[in-house]
Image 1 (cartoon, rainbow, N blue to C red):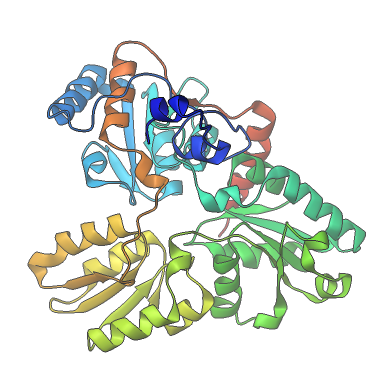
Image 2 (cartoon, rainbow, N blue to C red):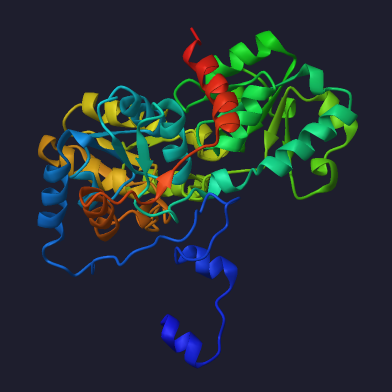
Length: 394
């Protein structure tokens, strides 16, 4: 139903519906705010040519970053591709670029703004491109959690470790309370560092990465981990449970990686004899335990690059990347399939499409700065402190 039809019928879309449409505003949400301007039609046959022309006109003034989970139509215009932290660092290494166009989601653009110079301007083509996982931990909820830990008498023993997939506010909280940031590649090193600083870790916002790293990689038990639910009084935990725990896991997850199940693993093994199951550590613990290989998006790419011809792989990560890898390695006779039978893209990552990219590039080429992502100075200072602690990890 169109907006005109809803107005004619006097039907008011809900705030969430408007957010999903990229309209209205919710500054506290990773889903972002309204995207102004008239977008070109997705059926415009000249979109590719328009994107090329605008990018050529901007020249070295623009640097386009493309996350691995982006659509092919967008990735083709990326100057570099990678995971969120690699892209943020790549942007910081290009100080001559006045505009950083980040084809990813909101928290990634925030990280790029934190790590780049004050003269550089970070642009997100669609401000409604957010992250459901990052949305699961707000600054207010985390502050309340810290109050709970203080009342339990353990806050001084707790070191926060926040996943890169978190808002600037959460990164700032982490920096302010002596913690560090981690990626899916260095989570084990980050946790080792944290346990050298304190007795317990508050891991935000992805419970699965925290649990998998602690149990699978560091030899802890599932009993060492408790799950803090921000929607329940005291996180749904007793004071005794908090005091006994080593890992206090935030109740958050990735909506894509959380879909994979043990049934998915068992089913693909039956359908494809000899298949290698390779999953991201954001998957559930039972999925990671049943997989043959576990690693970040960069790890997944490198593992498939090194795989022998004729090998078979079922990949548990976002579908855009899996399809791209399947096409890339088809000539080498590597069979690569999506772990789940159900098609599942990252819906917010997919909001960055060719019309939004064209609109952003053409606006910049005409001298109009649009959709700038700018982190305030205090938040940036503490978030940068947490990121620098990660960079200093051995």
